[in-house]
Length: 548
Image 1: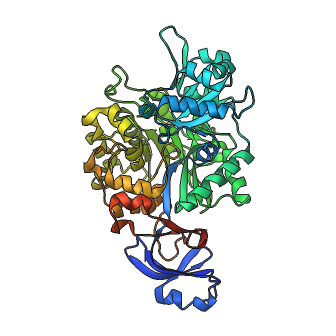
Image 2 (image 1 turned 120 degrees about the horizontal axis):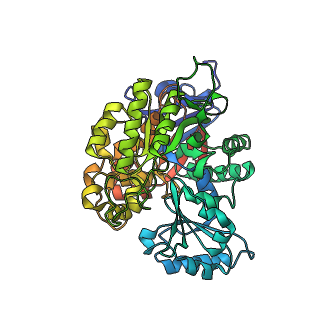
Image 3 (image 1 turned 60 degrees about the horizontal axis):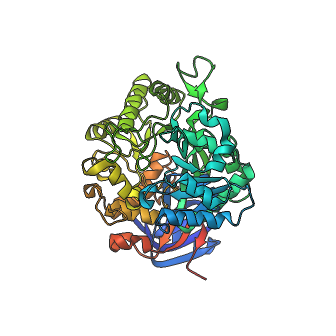
């Protein structure tokens, strides 16, 4: 054939390709599939590497369409306050005290992953003061939309606590004193104590996260918001990705969403941009890059968190009378950002969890498409958390891509159920309804909000049961195969890269995962325990547990 054959792989390949649903062998050149079955096996003598996976099932590599890689990597060094193992506020204070004892006086203690729904409430500032021994404390809520700080941290923040913060709040008691709880954009007050992070630190965090990804069978991810806003770690965050790639730390394919805070009006030639277009430096927009690192959608935050009771709802939260959450910016400002980004050529991904936020986002998308029609726009709603039947119909009519997280049902579903009540819970994190409406369903985790292993997510999409064992809108359950396709082909579609990944076909990238069992052949509850035996990216095994 006149080409270098890098590898020949044999196994039970499930290709997700209608033209070739299954295969027993594939050959790889330049990281792509060049032959199957008899043709592939005829190249055995030319193959530099040969592997036989025997009867073990092989699938296209898992693709997480919405996670936070730098945040996850950084969090691996922070105090883990997730539940389990923590089961009470007392256990949280004990964990804080133990970590504080290992720190120098005055050193900032950072913890992550606490959930007031599982601990019985948010931490109390006085108890944190006592546990930390005078050290400043910053505890990140599992949702990422709230933070708790103690008195020493409030002192470091200083007068900025009294400034007006749009799209966020410094929660205060009846006497007007800060309780230590910071909501949404108010988190930037404590983030300033450590930000911006250096590109070398962020590159190390990316590399650490990618080491976890490949062990879980993940071959592609989308980092859902970098370089700006309260979610960004540094204005040079994209440079950190480039550094990680140069240093060999970029082990899986990475799409990054740039924060909408980076966008602004542009003074360009009238032929280039429509009126009100919002662009970023040098006209960067979605699609720039290659199969390893590319710029994806622009990320817009419409609202906040369901379990944090800050997402924008049509009616009060079931357990918080008078609270319907809020938008993260004035409605007209959000509208201008969404429409302006679309006019400038961006694929737009809007975080919208509450039903009011989902409806508002669809209004903006409808106006954007009326201003500038795009037949294959791939506009996304990240989370699409509480979706009314009316919004479901509009989403389908507009061909918007919903990006819900099945993992939320399994890990934080009990808290979501309490926030919504039984009637509205049926509208939360819909799966089957999206598919019936004709939408393409991606698979994603929002890690580090919850544990992000794809097999966990697949099981949750099928089981639709909470941590306590309660059913959560069971009519939204989908089949194992639908869930697995979501975590590969569906996610590839959401990122406009289905022509090169998401299935195993001629010319596609040779990214795949070898499992110990076929998830379709075991009980759904057993899926998370299936071992990931090997992961291949670009035709090379980047993780292999088959041998010691």
